[in-house]
Image (cartoon, rainbow, N blue to C red; front, side):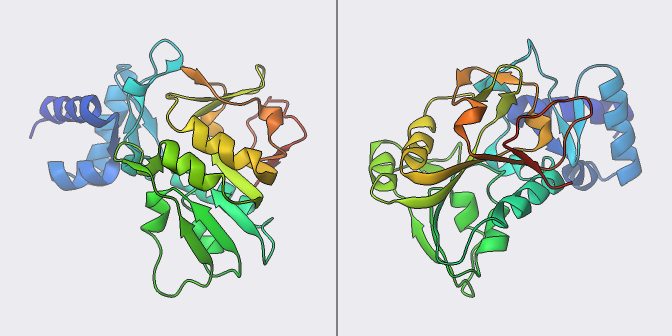
Amino acid sequence: MRGYEREEWIISQLDQDNFVSLADLVSKLSVSEATARRDLQNLEAQGKIKRVPGGAIKPLSGGILTRSSEIHMHSRLQVHPEAKRKAAQLASSIVQDGECIFLDGGSSIVPMIQYLKNRPIKIITHNNLLIAQLDDSIKAEIITIGGIYSREYAMSLGTAAVQQVSQFNYDRCFISCVACSIPDNMTYNVETETRDVKLAAMHHSRHSCLLIDNSKEDLQAFCRFEPLDSFESIFSNAPKDGTVYPDNFHFAE
C-alpha cells in the first residue's frame, strides 16, 4: 500500500471512531512502526490529525468537544495510558482499608482497579471496563450497579442505576470528566446521560474526588458538569507549565 493510500485509510478510520492506534496501523497496514509514525507525522503537518500517545485523534474543531468528536470508550484506554495510570495510582493511594468507595465510568478510572482490587475495601461501580479487568484473585468486595447498559460508554445508566447508587453511603467517590477549564472553574461532559449517576455518588460521599490527565485541561465540552471546586481533591498526572492551579489539585509528578 502506497503512502497516500495509507493516509486515506487512517482518515477513514478516524471518521469512524475518532481514534486510531499505532498498533492497529502496524498490524492492519503491514508496515513498520517507523513508517506508521511517519504517516502520522505527515498527516499532522497537514492539519488532518492530532497525534497523541498511542496513536492519533481527529483535530478539535471549534474548540468545543461534542458527541461527534468523542472517542469510543474501548479506544480511550489506549489514549494517554501512562498519564491515566499515574493519576489513578495517586488517587488510589488515599483510599484507606475498610472504606466504601464509588468508582465512576470512564477510561481514567479504569486503572484504579489494579491498585485497589486486592485491598480490604468495598467498591461500588457501574463501569463495565473496570469489571472486565477483574479476576478470581481479588480481595475487595465488588458491588456492580445495574440499569440500562450503554454500549457507547460501557457502563450502566438510567433511573435504575441512579437509584442503586443512591442506596449506599461512600467514604469517597472518584469521578471522571472529558474536559475541564481552570479559568472557568468548570468540568464538562459531551452528554447528559452520565451526569445523574455522578451526582448521586457525589451527594452520598464524604469526599468527592476528580480524576483527569492534563490533556483534558484548557478544553470545553458541550455539557457543563460541576465546578472544579466542588471536588475536595483533583488528581492528575502532571502540571502544565505556566498554569496556576487551585489548591485541590494533586499531581503524580
